[in-house]
Length: 111
Image 1 (cartoon, helix red, strand yellow):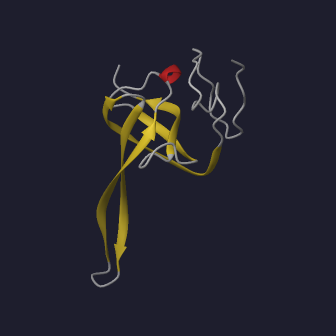
Image 2 (spheres, rainbow, N blue to C red):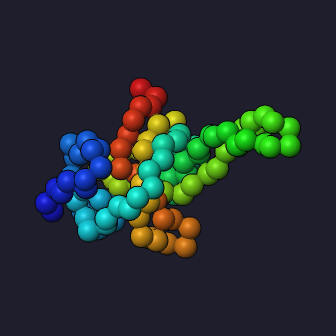
Image 3 (cartoon, helix red, strand yellow):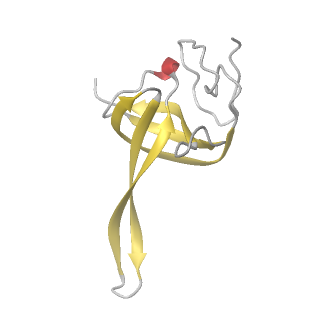
């Protein structure tokens, strides 16, 4: 397969893969939303659970509260994502019932 530039400034992986849902080697295009988070589960086939922590302003108490969300994202085999890694995910077309994001970059992780 031919490696393509996905246009978001993410560094391309050194490995190649035959996954059709890979944004670098397949035909999957990414959309406008980008987030980063920590991989908390990598037990599914080609799917990871990414946890995102953020703060929400509470107007009644004039304070911020901690919140978190868990997002299922497709993990291409060429990136080799494991639990504990910090990753950048991008929105894409729906791949399955609950997966509408794809991992585009591995930021840091457990060595």
